[in-house]
Image (cartoon, rainbow, N blue to C red; front, side, top):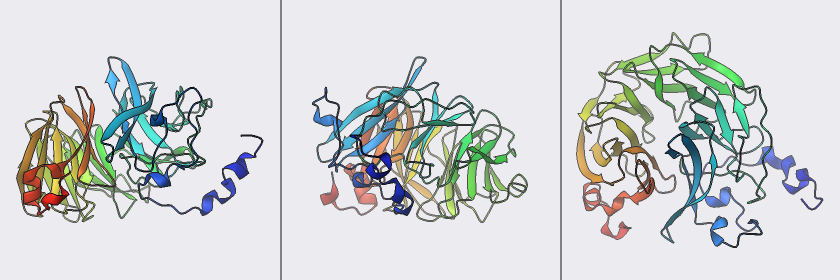
Amino acid sequence: MNGIPAVREFSFDNYEQEEDSRAVDITNVVDVDNQIADEDDDSEDEIIKRTDNLLLVGPVQDDAAYMEVWVSNEEEESLYMHHDFLLPSLPLCTERLHHDPGSDKSGNMCMDPIITVWDLDIQESLEPAFKLNSKKKSEKAKRRIWSQRCGIRFILESSLRAYISKWLSRPLANTTDLDEGRPHTTITAFKEKVQSLGFSPDEAQHILTGCADGRVRLFHCRDPQSVNSSFVKWKTMNEVEKVLWNPNSNNYFVVGDNAGYLLFADKHHPKNFLWSQKAHEEEISGVCFNTNVGNLLASTSREGCLKIWKFDSSEISPVYSHEFEMGRLQCVKQSPEDPFTLAFGGEKPPRCRMYNIKNFVAVRRAFDISDAENI
């Protein structure tokens, strides 16, 4: 670093005094005025601009699994892969870590019983930055410097705060203290594997889980001694694929199962669902609430279809359905900057696609959105 001490170069002395801004803005992520691209690469695509958003994609080809960092820019109408790295096993899920001792990093969970955490600022990385539930220390990879402050915020961001939870093929869940690098709480109150979970938006010690045994469970993890006996639950007729808290009203959540049903519940009324809807012909692969329009819900399924719904606490009604011709839709995520912009992961090329649902006339009519807002 030209002889400049790392402490002064990166202002590590003031790291703990920095404000914890959760707004997903590229200026909070990358110092766009101080980026350095490879000397042998003149492409402007290497530089992350202020108007860029970043998207994490985990494709699988035969037995090979990758993690790709894509760049999207609405002004330029562009979406392209910036860089990728090889994963040691098939990716089960990805989560953004808001808390990591040292710097901001993204966590990737693979099909091994280990959580691997990768630094997205390192290109051509062969090893994760560190592992949870592993005593081996990974070697440092060669770093390409994008900015003075490491870390990327991207569209898959979610608030996990100081803990991250992992779910495996075994019927248990762990919450791991990242500062200590060891499990904080182990939950064993499951009869089948846990397939989805979510931290409560306003009470981080509350974890909602969806299991293959058809149960949705709500745990209070503050006391590890009583966590396996003090939970409440809801019973469904099928395997639970997705659980998601409603960010507009934190007492409510939606459930998606492997038979294509959507169910809506209030955490204060266990055992009962407020409504149930046969939404798709195949299993639910993704659900998104809209943070601007409180009664808008989007869902996807393995049949390759996106559906938009209008709902309240007593009923749900269809608004629009769209086929993306990407084969099975594996997942859907909402842009943190624009809740109408959704990112889809599909079985067939182009594998990753972004779309603004305000382009659908039926959506604008159903939710009183002006035609002038059509993208």
